[in-house]
Length: 346
Image 1 (cartoon, helix red, strand yellow):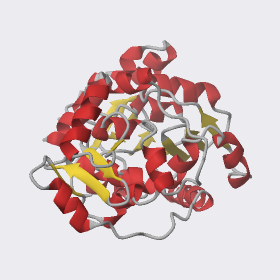
Image 2 (cartoon, helix red, strand yellow):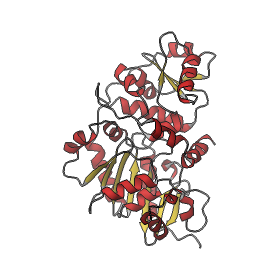
Image 3 (cartoon, one colour):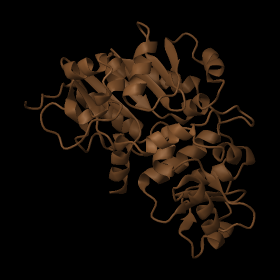
Image 4 (cartoon, one colour):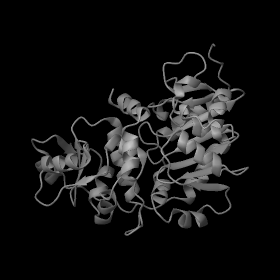
């Protein structure tokens, strides 16, 4: 079957996708996705690609809506094999969130990893703190599920007629509308309502970090924003308590490790690897800043910044809900996420 001709409105979606993809408060690395439904086809961002490149690259993949709907109706886990729904020939694989976009009836669906939203939805009391802020909107909060078919089913089962804002626990935000302009306006409204002041930016101790990193596999992070997680004790405590959302696990490993007093980067990395089975790509040096493994991928750098941006928005002592051991490992052992990591490393 030949690839369908894209609708005119796909041009508007690509432009909007590029705008939000360039905003690290909404999208980090290859995270997030957008889609457009037209007739029997849905165009959705390809897995592992960057929304920021939507105007430069052909990253929107056409999928067969009828075939996808039939698989979802059968509760088929095969919907996570997104490549089987592609219409025509395309070199890229549709997003693992293809089924999630499909269960929403609106023409335009936008899924972002907004740091302000994540700072709310990693809390055990998320429902209570979201309710007054989202009053007047038709919104739902969906408990954490692994991205893909499982999450799509949970969203489908929770939807009410007219729901156009879906908040995903320990994950992010979805807005849906019948035009790109309406989706953009709704996203702006929700993010305004959930905005949190991260506080003042502090300066890392560059000299101390360089001295620690000398001769090691690590180097100081290049931007001040990434360092903030290590410069506030409450932020450090939140970050080192475990994994808070899926993309951190995919690109930064399970949890986050901080150097103990007098510990070397090599010692901290060995301790972390013994605990998780993974070589950590970042280390926190409390009171000084963040070390990243030399040659860290773009995705790792983006998610290290995201961690800092999220935990800086938490009040001290906020009750956090971390991913469980099982939830961490089902992400790392999943072929869909191995594919994304491979693209990031390429």
